[in-house]
Length: 364
Image (cartoon, rainbow, N blue to C red):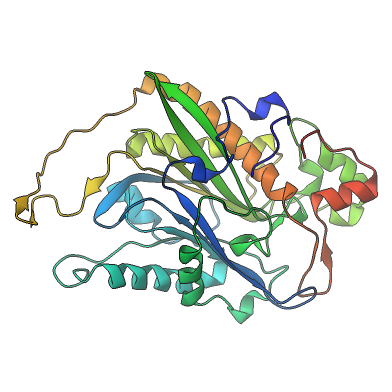
């Protein structure tokens, strides 16, 4: 559940939500399907599902995507950028399993909406990925569409972090990475709203790692020179959820601020790293059937919606930046050391710090 509350006030910026997870946004749920063959086995991969509340297809969510460095194979981002909406859950997985997750989202949409492809258009699944090949046998393509369904069925408010689901085989700053999440609660006009961030971390060079401003990576790299690479390879993908009444333009501005969290932790968005963010709001949803008659009534083509003033952006940007930084650290803090497909061990942050005699910041 995020990192504990006494980890450096710089990570706070605003109060954390009760779980310190993206699921603090009302109605948002997260689920995992984990494929693990045990220590030294070939498969260490899976699927993570971010499931917004309600029916995303008939009642679409305002959304945006932002690509800081495009070394990635995510699916569905072009239409999200063009239309400014999200119409399926979001699945995360490994790079070569995007197709299986796309298939799962399509089948899920077809099962629940018989009109798709008949009396209305198709559907735009959103899939995000990172390459877990150093730990997982990615060529085996172990993820199948049923694992996408499994992750969506498992979605709940209490989600695991670390080496679970799509994060099972991920490496972050040369250490065991995976799934991390955090949230912040803001108040406008006497009402509370939540911004939540979930990341899948697979990027960074150990010697660059900073936690709450402390150059922990330099100390760890001195002990474990074999992990020093100098290259920020891999990827990090992130999802922002909020119940703030913001439009697609504002959500894209939110998404850009995830890079602040990345750089605070020591990432520099390297040549071979993909930094990709999708942001959505559960407010001001858009009716797929606008202009049609549904249940005996004609749905309007023009509606009205509340919208957060841009004068509030600074506090939101700070919340996104802080939650992103903490989510990245949380992915490291919750992951355990793992023996991957090659028989080599990928050390967790805690285990390597213990071997090196390095004190981590309080709260980890």
